[in-house]
Image (cartoon, rainbow, N blue to C red; front, side, top):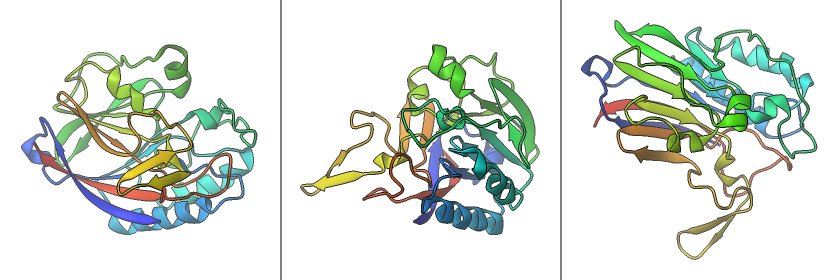
Length: 244
């Protein structure tokens, strides 16, 4: 797996937040036999040691209820200033036959966001953090969380296509997951890759921009359908924000 520090240029970043460090984790899929649990544990330990300003987790935490106890143990290792949204697998809204719905209404640590935004203070600066419920997104592509409330605004949504739906300027930075960087990828030629999962996806992993909004899509840590990855390394990312 990869433990990556990535400098990320963001439009409209306040001077006070220059160099802000955000740990981005996603797609644990705990509760099914997979190397993803080992990758998730390693990622959590790495984040705990680095102690970033914020920790954000963008969904698909568990795939079966037996993963809930393991999830609680892992989250207890992370800083208190953590914000989390759920993904479609947390509600078994998937074609994956190994996925089962769970009841994640409260977390051992951190703030679970569901179609809401909250205010926090980072380095003395007000920051708005919003989170989209995956059920709302799948039902109506909902992205509206009211008017902007802070000089810097961060949105968490499991699904990367949210970038196409948000109003320009509403959010400075979006964090997403969902696609596992393809999970099973067949390289061909020098630079080309064929994704066997979501082959037509526009936002596979990495950094994307639409007008003044920047988005980071995490490759995630776990797996679905099959318990391994191929040419799609799991990753935990520490984003270091820079003004653009």
